[in-house]
Amino acid sequence: MIPGSNELKFQQTRLDSWKSIAQHLERSCRTVQRWHSQFGLPVRHLGGASGSVFAYADELDEWMANRGNPLREERPEVRKSQQFVPIAHQDPDSPGKSLAFSLISGQDEARSAGMVALADRMWESLSSQSLRKITRLYRDATDLDPGNAQALAGLAFALLSQGLWGLLQLPAAYAESKAALRLALEIDSELPLAKCGEAWLNTVSNRDWQAARLGFDATLQSRYPRRAAIIGSAALHIAEGSPAKASRLLLEAAHLNPLASSAIEWLCWSEYLAGEHARALFLTGQCRAGGRHGTVEVAVEALASIQFEEPGVQIERIEALISQTPHTDVLSGALGFAYAKAGKGRQASELLAAMTDTRSMQRAHEPYAIALPLIGLNQIQKAVGLLEQSYRNGSIWSLGFRSDPILATLRNDPHFCHLMSRLNYPGSNSGDSHLGLVG
Image 1 (tube, rainbow, N blue to C red):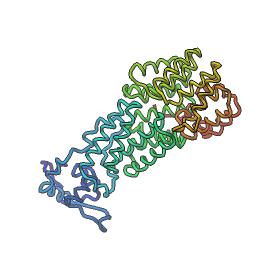
Image 2 (cartoon, helix red, strand yellow):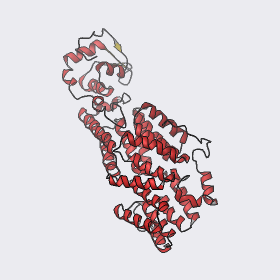
Image 3 (cartoon, rainbow, N blue to C red):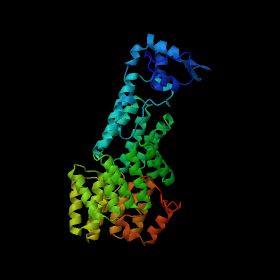
Image 4 (cartoon, rainbow, N blue to C red):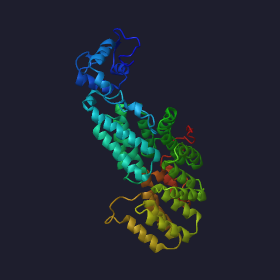
């Protein structure tokens, strides 16, 4: 009830928590805590300043009527301005925040909330180019307001995505993402975006397939952030060795938001893994025509070309892609594989040497990418070692090892078979061969 309305007034109604006080004043817990600290909102403490609190409704109403009128217009509640948020629907002023966060000024709270709202909106048209800007917004929002759970969860998701797309090094990106998620969940243990991020980390980093499945299913039931949970469920199907099932879910995710690149890029990859190489090439061409040019999409175009086109066409296409998108590891690895299969062993060896030259290497290359020219050159044991490293690092590409056509020549190799028997994939060690995901 808003104080001063014509509805029946509370008569000596006792409110026994910050949450009930906040609900009575139609503000967040954090806002009423700040009013108490800075302006003397009549809230009593039991057992000292750190003890439990209570207040009387009529005293609160009188305080608002006499001294609180200017505060009503202090700023609009964030929950009323973020109804559009596509990946999370939560008031950043979570009831789980401690009184310590009340020291943050209302201006910083508002600026932080505004940055989160903008970053959340930018997810609607997500691309690898915009992801850095999104990450910056979330980080600036957490700098202004360390108690903004939605900003922390958004930062965790952005860091995770940068790692998956090859924009940040693994596993450092996962370590930062886990730290941000831990803080977000300490503030609000039920925040859907944080729970979904936790499920993603269980998929790509912890490889806890059962926990990931439960996390995505719970997120899908809460409806927010639905698209991220659908893509995560598709990733589990890919790990299970069922890319066709993944494609069906990814089509649903793409229809939810046609402007966002993530679902389309995953769909290109799942079609490649399912052996639909012509369709994968068609989809990557559509991405380019629509102005999308992500790292996963161009890598899939190269991989699908190797399976579908003549050697000369493959090499010409991949070389053109590298000129347009340099420093994309899997593109370089695919070119090395294509050189080797076309009988150009010298070029393949030179490219491999450049990828593994520690003297000139400014960053660690994706192990899966380095394994590709080794496979083409028939150096299988070295390649298998790199594939294991890719899995241990939490690479997106390692989710597809069961289906990846470029690894087909390894299926009967004893080194590769031994590796796959040791790695923890759904259905291999746990007996969880059918994940039963919500779609």
